Every structure is written in C-alpha cells, then in structure tokens.
Length: 149
Length: 149
Image (tube, rainbow over all chains, first blue to last red; front, side, top):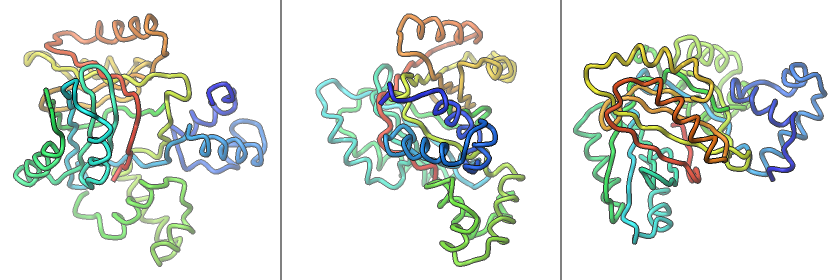
C-alpha cells in the first residue's frame, strides 16, 4: 500500500489527526480540492487499513477512571499469537499492541480508581498470560501532548 | 467535572470512541434523542476537557513509519515539569504522558524505519532528559486492538 499513498493522503491524515471530525467540505476547503476527491481518498485510506480508526481521546481521570499500561516481557519460548487471541476477548484491555524491544506486549487497561478493584483486574489479566518474564506497570497521571501524526 | 457527567454523555463517548466521525444526526438516531441535545452535550464535553481530542489511529507501518515508545524512569530529585515543557516542543515526540509506577514519563516517537536515523532521533530526545534512571525502548509492531473506552 505504501507506494499508493500520495501527498494529499498525508495532508488529509495530518488534518484528521488534529481533528477527526472535519467534514469532507472542510477538508476540501483546507486542501484546495473537491469534496469528491477527499471522500474518494478517505475511502481508500479506510479500506486499505491505513486508517485503523477515528476515535476520541478522553481525559480518563475526569471520567473517574485510571489508565494503566502493562509493559509485558514474555519468555522467548512462549507463543504470543495464542496469548493475543485470548486477551482480545478481555473487556478490561482496551489496547493491545505487539512489540519488540523492552516489551513484547503493551496492554492498556482503563479501570476503576478503587485500587483494590484495579488490583483484581490486573491480576485477572496477568493470569491469562503464561511465561511472563517481566512486567512494568505504569499509571498514566496526565496526557500532556497527543498528536497522532 | 466528574459529577456533571451523565449517562447520555458516557453513551456519546462510547459511540465516538468507536467512530469519532459520527454526525450529530447519526448520534441522535442511535441514542434516541435530538441533534440539539447531542450537540449541546458534546460542546460541554469538549469545553470541560473531558474530550481531549478527536483523532485518527493510523497504521504507522503502512505509512512507512515506526512507532517507538520510550518508558522513562527519572531519578526522584529531578523536576519533571521542566523536562515536560522542553519535550513538548520536540516535533519527534507525538505523545507525552506523565506517570507513576515503573515509568515517570511515557513518550511516543513516530520515526523513520531507517534505524540509523531513528537512533539519532532517540538520542536527541534522551539528551533532553536529565537524570534518567532507566529507559525502556519498545518498538510497536502491530496494534491488534484499539478502543478508547
């Protein structure tokens, strides 16, 4: 797909990363082109999977939640595919990313502020992951900057 | 603000987390209410900072980029406010989160796939952070699941 991405696609993506609710009309005006062209390019970006999702970034703290990141390092012999399939069904885990480096799996949990409840949720998640070599638990206190692109 | 959030707000947020491009009309139909009410609630959610941003989640790999997470643990005596102010201006750092636990700062870099270039960028970022006690570098290879709420 990468070779089919052009300059207008990147400019559309940058604008949507700042505000995903911009209409075709607004995007067309900002980029000096037509709504039809914007609509066509966006459909392609969506269908090719270059746009995974349009979403909202909430202030979890204000909503009464806590945002926890689990950085999981898994022993080399363990099958990560199998773990990922199991974890996908866990409603407490909102984001699952496969990775290389310090961690092999990055899991985001949006949980209650009650620490006892949260402990239970984290324990129920880690119980589903065999062969954990190391686990980093990070509690996000504030999102200071957020740009997708 | 948390006490002013009601059931309709949460339902709007859940729908927007699945698709931030839903129109007022579509949201109103899905929730059995009026466009006016949806528009009023969303304005409040935006103005109160409960909605930080509407954004797009791209497939960085397909765009030719690599997504790197730096989990930074900082020595207790260091002033994080000062570091954050400096890092905000760094265009390579797309996401900055303050945190407690394994890491005090979580930084997301969207960089080139060229490892030599990427090394330079990571070095330029870490050079701006005094008093690093420990640094975890994680390269995201695939986003398997992404739900904001």
